[in-house]
Length: 223
Image (cartoon, rainbow, N blue to C red):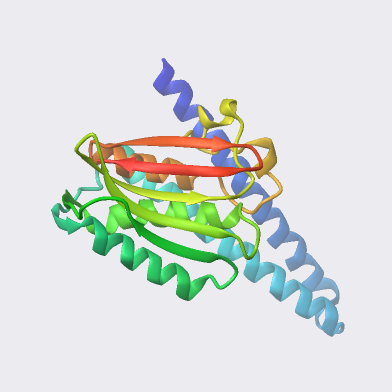
């Protein structure tokens, strides 16, 4: 019964999220048909809006397909030996290269660990945490990536000094399409952390989350 209700809510939320970009694209297509041929300003504005909404819809559909494939058991993990240090260093270097608005630090908090993991999927989960940290952290502030061991279990960690979350939101943050009130003013679909959770669950790991409003958030993947 719970699974059925979850599926129904998922389909309803997905439809709601797709309705907005479709409406925007439709509206601008109508504008183009009426005035776009004669008004260059309308033409440029419409093309820009349609491109933006198409990218947003493409990203959302890709996320929906990932979760659908995962739910149906069609996504298989390709396990290999992965260095925690190398994976986090790679994520760090990519972040520095693509995001010049924040200061990134890489810290080792313990010995390197060889993980049995799907490298691509695990890195995707880390990237989701980094993207979230960047989204909710002011320009110029610091985001710290680290790895280490806790109680003999390896972890990968992302810590920011962003807007943080209330404890009530932490309990729901991995639910599909869930977005805290403070997060609604930021771009996003509410699916990234659900995908990260699916990946970590499949690796038989779990998350440890510490967050304080207006102070920041620390999310640790424990494997």
